[in-house]
Length: 316
Ligand code: SF4
Image 1 (cartoon, helix red, strand yellow):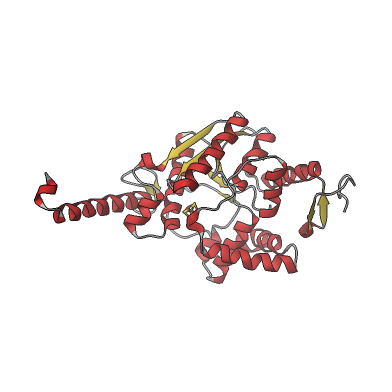
Image 2: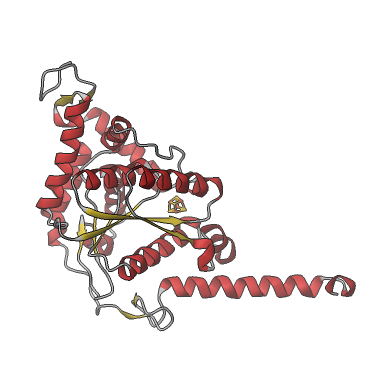
């Protein structure tokens, strides 16, 4: 098999694009695809400051690598979620990546912010991913605002987008479908634009790019992802893709191009400001502060139950 571009020996065959590439041509192809997506969707311009949310996985590090290579002003943001060795190892990968490219990195350890994902899940009886989502949204928005960034970029790839779209279509979650687009414009002065430059690049393409570029990323998935519905949707989509290459791309691309614009913008007034933290909120207190309050309340009640069952001598 020969490289579609230079006719040298190809190392990767992309059935969905009817193309094959050698290593240098694939790197070029990947970077150009992202550059085109950024320009076509008007994600950001070279003068803007971009905060890249990095998890230590292949997608976010590959995205950061491309943006650095293209000369954008970027800074990484890593949230240490406090999920045991998964968090410590992924943090190490991110730190090493930033050092190797001498790019700035912000680290927010959730343990210093009063609550980690495991404690939130333990004390609120929410599934860890629900608590994690609330915390990520809050700290991403807060960091983007504090640092005066123009844009927040995340590494969601085509497989993530296709799985999310499938889930929302299967349950006709029209409110979510209305917001499912690669660029989210801010609805409040304290929010920044949120963009997903990898939304047309498959998980396979991103993994190959990371490998060809020698990016050292965490291979293990977060332990809380085991059994996630999202992974089941991904499996189904992979089966469809194997039979009909290009299905995922058509599914997502056509939704974004022709279906998503037919959804009305979500109803309701723009967010106000949370009475506790001052960040935008759709109620008097934002969902993050409510979560924090619930954790504190349950912690205190667990402590007082413990104390009331201690024998008198143990209390001294
Ligand atoms: Fe957070 Fe769940 Fe993702 Fe783990 S799998 S990082 S808990 S959202």
